[in-house]
Every structure is written in structure tokens, then in C-alpha cells.
Length: 380
Image 1 (cartoon, rainbow, N blue to C red):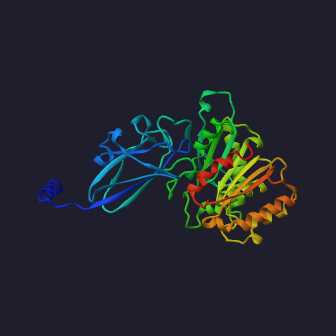
Image 2: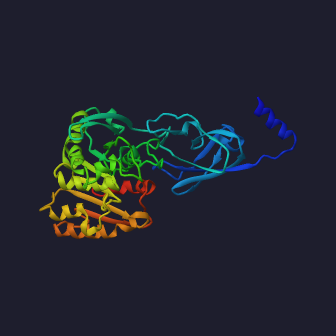
Image 3: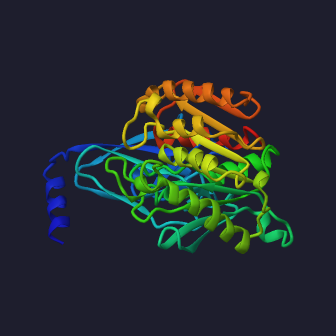
């Protein structure tokens, strides 16, 4: 009661409280991303939980943005909607989350990625565990099953395998950015458009998640210079066998796609070279060809492996892209040499492989999220 009485006394004395500016930045789902988004909350500035009076946000891609001013020292709770409680944000499993909250002491920017909307959620995200002899441990998988999986009991589906499972489906797991790659959203959207079949998507989790600063077990596993050989064998044999045995997959290389970003893209490319005949398509976004040793193009281990590979799987198709911002701006030399080596193997650009420079793109989750759809459909 002391704090409440103190605020009341100060108000009665005409003392003006300082105000703090709170900014909202909301990353919407992939589908119809420009639709109006609102913040509904416990204070008057957010409509006092009346969605009809909620704060409307402005669409400034890739964010919906808005701001309010509230008394410093106050507290408020809030939710994100498209204008009604029937259209509020849900988590990656389709559940309505608890209220978000904020203690106001300084100006702040509050950023959230919406996993999906209540009225549009589809598919099912599940967890699975595989015991790996090659890795010497159990490994957790996140498996997304498309809507038709539960409706059509006899139907089989293509398989998409992606590295960095924590960053694939669920913003709540996508530390430190809080931005997931929206793989499930892309598959749903592209399948509705008829440009990609409904597919099972599996994200392979690394025990310690993802760190952009330190060389972790994740980096060691994905790096061809370190543990990439064993990890590639795990993906190509144990993981694929597990998915074919426990899920209704189409168990042929032409129905399998392997993909990743950064070091995950490098390992996907390496796996395609070292384990031919398992995957028919590979998607490599912002490939970290420099690896953990920071090698220059002429000494890049993965490109040297390509050069030394006698022949390539004639049925394999590989997509590569990179941007011109952040560390991606250093990748032109690697991709130039890559293109030259692939052409030297008899591959035709646009038929067996694509190397795409994307203006304005960088080495970050928001950029990868926007580019994933093109990577999925390049050779569909």
C-alpha cells in the first residue's frame, strides 16, 4: 500500500511524473505480412484490453512499428492481434501465450516475432529424439507435419532437413535474435500456391543452441574442418533412416531437400559432396565457405573438396545465395570460384545449380527468413 499511497500523494501535489517512450517492433508471419497489426493491453494507451481501441502499428517492412508514452515506473501487460481476440498471436504450437509484460524505467524497444495467428494456424510441430551412434549421444529433433499429414493417412510426403533446429520454427527458441526462419510458414504458403508440395520439415537441434560469438559444439559439428565429416554421416544415414522409418516420407533422393544458413549451409554442401545419392536438392543460404579457420577462397577446404571430386551426382540440384551487406559482402570471391568449379565439372548454371547475389541482403536471421522461400522452390 505504501507505493500506491505515495503515488496518490504525489499526484495530489500536482507533481508531474516523467514519461518514457516505448517502441514496438513486430515481425509478422510470412503469409499476408502487410495486414494491420495491433497491440492491445492493460493501459489506456493500448486500449485497456479492448481490441477495438488497441494501438495500430504501421507497416515498415520487415516490421510493424508503433510507440506509446507511459509514466516511468509503471507496469503494463499486452498482447498482439490483428484487431480481435479471434485473430491474436499464438506460439509455434498454436497455443495462446500468456500476456507479455513490461516494467517501464527507461525508454525501450520491444521486439517480437509472431509464430502464427490463432485463426490461421495449421500443421503440427512435434519433438522427437534420435539416438546416434555416430554422434555418441541422443539428439533432439523438431518435426513439423503439414496439415494433410493427419487428414490423409496413406499419403507420403517429401522431406526437408534443416540444420540449426532452434532457429527454424519457433521464435521462442531462436536466441539471441528472437527471429525464426519460418520454415513451416514457407512450406504452408508455397504449397497453397501450388509451387511446392506439402512437406515434412525436420530441424536438427544442437545441444547448446546457436552462438554468434564463440566456436561451440554446433560450429564444430557443422564445420568440415572439425567435426563435419561425422555430422554429415549422421544426417545422411541415421537421420534420414529415422525419418523414413517413423514418418510417412517419400524415401527417394528426389523427394529430399537438405538446407542451412551460414555454417549450416556449408555443411549441407559438404554433405552433398561426401554423401551422394541421399539428397536430390540442397539449399545453401549465406554459405560460410571461410569456415572456422577464416580461409580465403583459394584455400577453402570445401571448395578444394569440390575440385577434387571426380564427378557430381547428375540428379543433384544446388541453390546458393549471398548478400552484399555485413559479412556476406565478403563472399563474392568464394561464390565466383564455386561457379567456375561447378561449370568445370560440366554443370550448367540455371539447370544443375544457381548462384544468386541478392542486393541489400545480409548475414542475419531476418534476411535469411525472407530468402528461404526462394531457396525452397528454385528446383521444385
